[in-house]
Length: 67
Image (cartoon, rainbow, N blue to C red; front, top):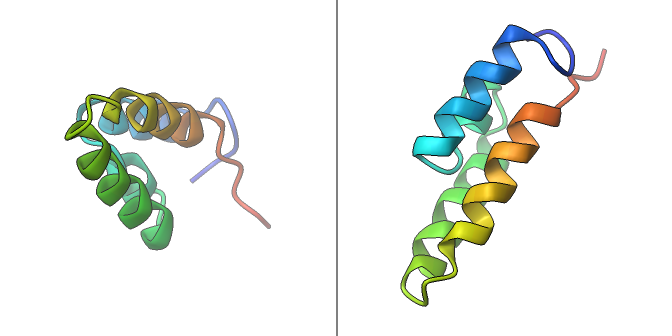
């Protein structure tokens, strides 16, 4: 994927909006995707999943690939 603000990051952020971690998975960041998906699932039990949901969208949108 290209850098921050690219179309790929916008698509990843939209995917994370619907399912936390999906955008990170599209960017090839498997560990971060699993962490955010599981953390959001656990926290939604306590009605705090929205925090991870927002973090997931912002993280996907601001991601800069190395190299």
